[in-house]
Length: 236
Image (cartoon, rainbow, N blue to C red; front, side, top):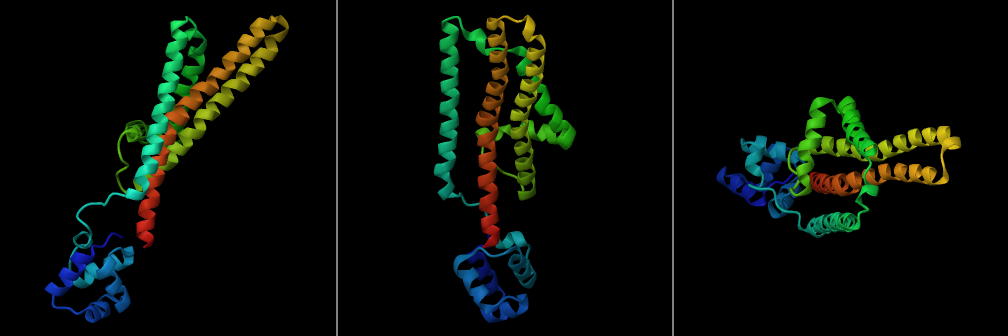
């Protein structure tokens, strides 16, 4: 836990306790007390033992604010920048196609609706209405930092991992259904129609990749970074 070295030392001195006496009262070793007063940190058990010995709340021994994790900042910005560049490249490509009258080749209403209904539908069945609502609201993590308790962030992590797989799962299901239909009608289709039908089946994978890689992967990255950082703090 994030025990403040300064607060621990101040509270100990205010109560007239030596490091050795505080160690005996809390059940911690003298070396642990010395380390905590020098560098802070500590485990949840140490925090609870010290707060009980000093007769204060655990929060009184913690830092006033959560410190920024500077060694992750570059990686976070890199992912945000990469996602932004990919999105801009996609938009520019679509604008270019639209200017030449070819925008319609990237539009397939059936594939898009299937993706938009399949992912939320399975999420609703798996995580319930609140899980679906949380997954929609917390897409704001695209431009915000991950907050909330560790349990909440782990739940969101599992939720977005499920949706990430569902995006590609929806493309797979749509492709299989489409292939069955294409093979069933293939004797009556011309070569051009057959090629067009197979091309439409690829659009499901394009929509799935856009949703998974441009929306869910950056959010998952932020959650993973936040969870790993807190677990590292708890371990120390």
